Image 1: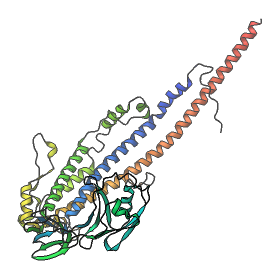
Image 2 (image 1 turned 45 degrees about the vertical axis):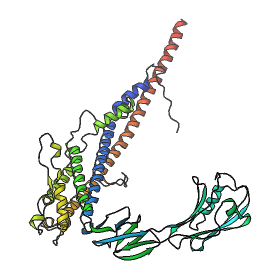
Image 3 (image 1 turned 180 degrees about the vertical axis):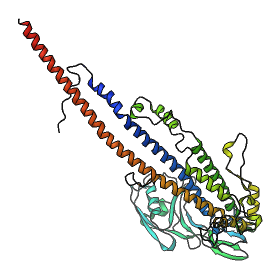
Image 4 (image 1 turned 60 degrees about the vertical axis):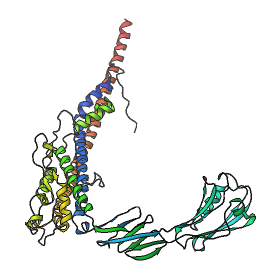
Length: 495
């Protein structure tokens, strides 16, 4: 469809484009307000998602504290890590082991005689030789005058026979070593055409070199190992050196892991309190509202960023979900757990208390305070009691009013966080769902705004077209009057 011709002030001298543009600014004011409302919802959703990420993170940590298996992990310590270290598996049990390392397992190493060369240079002669590694695996290396020494080493190393070839630039000699260790690891070189291996590479082709087994004594029992590692009674031992005296490896409950996770919970909870207080107590500004497109065009990028940073403040001022999160979690963390001994039935029994009001530090109110010494002593002296404080379960129906009072703190907080996360998702939806099908509260608001914006866009387009038609008609009328005036002037001039 061909658009109608617009006469922009040709007859009247009026800048009709400028006039219509100014008139349309008024028409676009309701649309700009909708765009600002849409931007505010987008900023709110970003803030909610940020909080939800924090809630999900702390929930993941609390999830680990809910289960007894997290408290029953074993840890191994060595009196001399330079000789032997150990790591526990799921089947490890508490105990003590004495370890003596008589010798370490080694790979087979074949060293050549001195030959001074640049490995990037060409060999200059043709020939071949065979390298045999562990389990009889071998490879034939064929060399031409244009073959470089680097290429020979790459052929051996890429053959998959379990042998690495290298050149010692300091001592100027080639070396071949097995990738495996132990007596079964062996390597030898068999000369071929032109005695290339012995004459050019200066390798010994008369002997087979083997590795050595490790010899270790554990709790008085001597064992020979082809590797410098082994698994015994749920422990993975790594042999690092030869011992001059017995090394003690102790396996005990990993209290450090338990203390570390409880400390991390306190840290993350306090960060959550800080974040929620910041977002719910920041008062939104009536001065700084989302910028319109026209306003952005008149500003620099830096000015836009500074303005919007102030406009985003207070998006979740006095938000009910966030304030409810702090109320719910605080309620869950205070009090005692019914059914547990009086000396180990509250967080205060292991050194965790709520901070009171401190003059000049109002932001600390509601956060947790941790007595690390008291926590460590509790975990060391009574780890099972500490475990139950977090993992205790109830036989009551979850709907029973006394159910929560009989459950551990980790279970309580996990339930609270899950409820609050679900509430936020209900309000803002998820990032994987498009606005068109988002059934959340903010999603519905966005759809309503988008519908209104579409209607206004159509109306604005229609109004703009009407203005142009009116001004075009005016221009045509003025042009006609001008033509009539010119004709009359001509007629009068002839009288």
